[in-house]
Image (cartoon, rainbow over all chains, first blue to last red; front, side, top):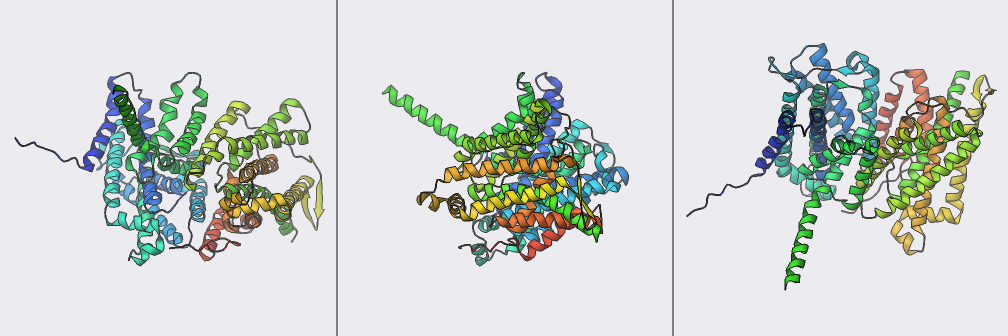
Length: 335
Length: 291
C-alpha cells in the first residue's frame, strides 16, 4: 500500500499561524477566558510585529541598523489618516500613497547608509526619525499637532465598512502576507545577496553583488513594512499622537527582533508578544504586581538577553536537548 | 550684537548640559562597548531623587544634590555589577536592548517612588544677573557653564595624566590586551558606569530649573547627546564634548535667526549632510576592515 504523504510547505505554517491568530476574537466572543480588550492588545502587537519584520530584514539579513522605524511608521499613519478623513480618499489609494512617501525617504536613508555604518548609521537614522517627529508636532495642517489625529476603521473597495473585529482580521492577513513574502525573498536571490553583504561588504562586491542596489532594497523593504504597520495602526487604534513615535518605540522594535531572534520570522512575532503583550495580558493579572507590570517586563527583557543572546526562538532546541538528556538519564538508570 | 552674545551664552549653558550627558555616554561606550540609551533615564530618575530629598527633608539644595550623586553612584555601580558584567558574550546590538530594559524599569519605577505630578526644582543660585557687553546671563547659568567646564576639565585631566586614566584608555583601546597587561578592566567598567550615571544627574539638575521634573525631562538631552557623539566621533573622549557645544550653539542660532519652528530639523539635516562628507565625525578616523 502506498502512503499518501502531503509535503509540509513553509507557507502552510504561516497560514496556519494566521488562522490561529484570527481565532482569538472568536474565542473572546464565546468564552469568558479571553476579554474583549485583549483584541486591542493583540491587534496592536500584530501591527508592531509587521514593522519589526521589516527591521529584521534590515538588521538580521543585510546587517544594517536603523533606529528610524518609529518615524516612518508615524509618517505613514498621519498620511493615511489625513487622506481618508480630511480628503475623503478611498482606503486603498491612501494606503498606497502612505506607503510610497515614507519608502522614498527610506531609500534616501539607504543612500546615506553607503557612507555611514554601525553606530553612526543608527544615530543618523535616529536623527531622521527625530526630524519626522518634530515635524509631526509642528505641521498641524496634516497631523493636528499635540492634540492628536483621529481616523476611522478602514472601508474596503468603497462599500465594505470594517469594524474592530474585521479590521483585526485584515491586520492578521497583512501579517501573514508579510511573513510569506519575507520568507520567500530571504530564501531567494535577494536573501542570498543580503547574506553575502552581511558577512563582508568587500567580498560580496567582489562576487558581483552590487551593494548600492541591495542596500536600497533592504531599506525600501524595511520602510514598506513599517509604513504598512503605520497605516494599520492608525486605522485600528484610530488615534495617533506625535509622542508615540519616539526613540523608545524604535528601540522596542529592535528589542523584539533581538529577543525573538535575528533572521527568525516566527521569532519576530514572539518578540513582539514579549515586548508588547506580556505586561497587558499576563503581568497585570497578578494582583500585587499590578503596578510593577512594565518594570517586570523590563527585567524580563534583560534576563532574556542575558541568557538567550541569540534569541528566544532557540529555547525550543534547548528544551529538546534537555529532554533527550533526561530520557538518556532515565534509560541509563534503568540498566 | 548684544543679542548674539546673549544667545551664545545661553547656548553654552545648554551645550554644557549636552556635553556632560555625551561624556557619560562616551565613557560607557568606550569601556564596555555599550551604547547607553538609558543615560537620560538614569539622569531623570536621580534628578527625581534630588527633588524628593529637597522637598521632603528641608535640606539645602546642594545637600540634596550630593544625595542625588550618591544614589546615581550606587545605581550605576549596581547596573554594572548585576547586569553588564555578565554580558561578555552578548552582541553589541543586544547590549543596547539591555539599556532599553533599564529605561523601562527606571521610567516605570519613578512614578511609584516619586508620584505622578510634575515637580519643580529651584536654581542652585536663586537670583542675580551678570551683564556682559549688553547681554544678560544669570549667575546660575554662569555657574552651570563654569561647573560643567570644571567637571569635564577634571575628567580629562584624570584621563590624560593619571594612572587611572591610563587604565581607562587602555581598556578603551583593547579590553582583552588590557586585561593581559594587568589592568583591572572590571573595575574600570564599574567606574565608568558610576561616573556616567553621576554625569547624568549633574546634567539633569542643570536642566531641571528651566522646565518641570517629569518622566520626559531628559529626552531632548539624551537624543542631542547621541547626535553630539556622532558629530564629534565615537573614537575620542573629547569629540562628543566638542560636538555637544557645537549643537548647543548652532541650534540656538538657527532657532533665533532662521526659524523658531524648523530650526531643530534644519540642524539635524545639516548634521546628516556633514556625516555623508565625514562619516566618522569631526575627530574620528576611518576604521580599516579586513576582508
